[in-house]
Amino acid sequence: MISYLQAINISRRSGDNLLFRKVNTKINPERERKPGFMFKEKKELETLQHKIREIESEKISIESEMNSGNPDSEELFNKSKRFGEILDLLDEKEM
Image 1: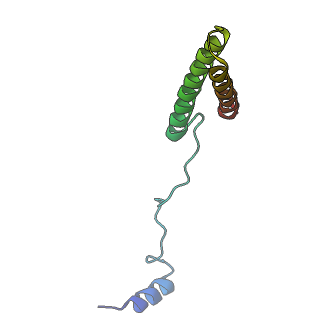
Image 2: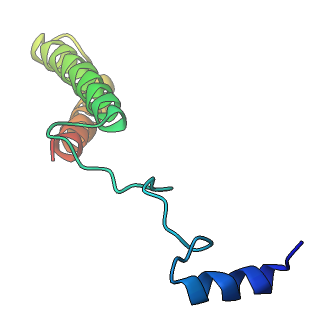
Image 3: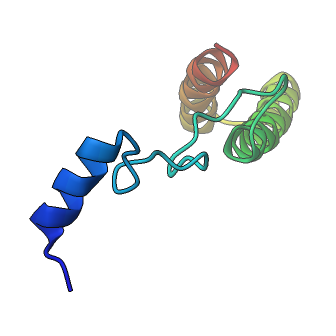
């Protein structure tokens, strides 16, 4: 039985580097990016769209309550404050 170093020397002398020959398969191949979204991006987009719909629905609800003329001054203040928060959220999510 020959040692590892002897095998390297024999391999070098013969010109055929069997021990260090590259295999055609790649361990971590560079993945080509396909057009479109990846799975995580699709899920994030769907979640974002769902949140935007919820916020817009709340905005419409608050607008109609504020325009009804029924709320007292404190309730009107709280709703207008929440309305401003909703507008900020929509601006943030839509960017």
